[in-house]
Length: 186
Image (cartoon, rainbow, N blue to C red):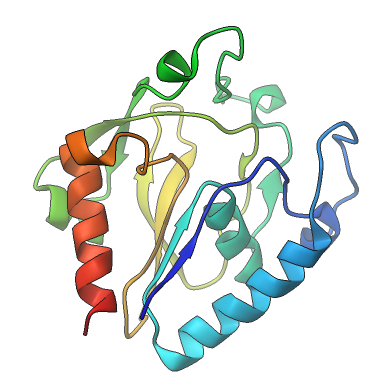
């Protein structure tokens, strides 16, 4: 009815977006890459609702021909989006920065506001946005935090943060998952 692409400790293999591995200490999962790329292709072709989170967000961008910064914290104007692993999981996953919602996007219409606070638990980020994707939200440093698939006939959205963390008490997460579930129930 719908496909949810979750996060993972493993990263998309940089070979998929024309780069060499810059972070050999971080795992990749080529079997997941292969499987997920086939799933994304089928979801788009069959108009199955699709929601990508964290690695799922990165997978969708690469699927559509985009590229990633393997260590976004070492690139230009971007701040460190990784969690502080010396802190408890409760602290690591709490909202830490605003995202600015594109007024022309789906998320802005759903949220009814211009900005929302989200958590930030990722070392990679979008370098080049994939073809046919619309920026839905950006971090204060300009890093893309959400996108939708332009002209998709079904729900097709991806977010860099983890809306599943405490989703029952986060109003924005509730809206996001409700829309995804409604699309999946059609």
